[in-house]
Length: 204
Image 1: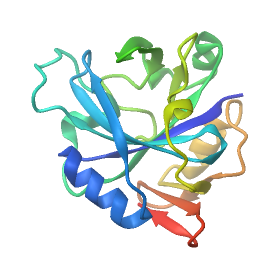
Image 2 (image 1 turned 60 degrees about the vertical axis):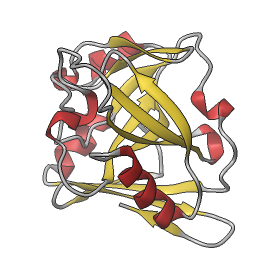
Image 3 (image 1 turned 180 degrees about the horizontal axis):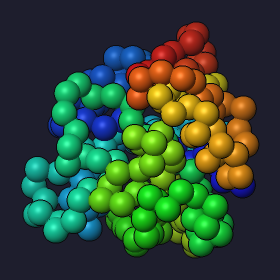
Image 4 (image 1 turned 45 degrees about the vertical axis):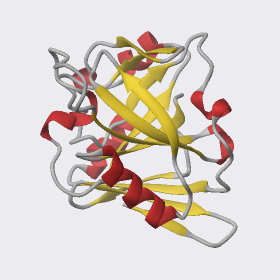
């Protein structure tokens, strides 16, 4: 089974993403870093239960990576919004054997001293219009959540709406069993609900 690793907000500019998230959640994001292979950069926030949160955008200072970026960032437009969830595994090959073929081949990525393998869809597009999770394996690398300050936020529900909800549930069934993950019929979208010392917080 896969384990929820982190969730991601995509944005056209990192500071726009920061403002969107910090206004909604009332907690400051921490610096992340650059992903040289894909020409992106991010900001981070630690959540409870070893999960973390990421704001990600194309790095305007990075050269063209020569391949399409993850999370469909090359086609992203509009206001910052929650677009992706990422699950971890200790056996990437076995996980991908049970996942839809549109997951694509895993690639090796780095950020600072972190190194990981990740499958994030063919040409950066994940199955079910981003409704299926990217799959990551950290190997011997430390997990980013261990380096982040506690935010006091706990993810209670991640609601994924999709016009193919039944098919998405079926595709996830052999891989994901997490009561926090809710699949609902509807237009493509995501909504995260958090508990915090000051009450419920919602991010879309």
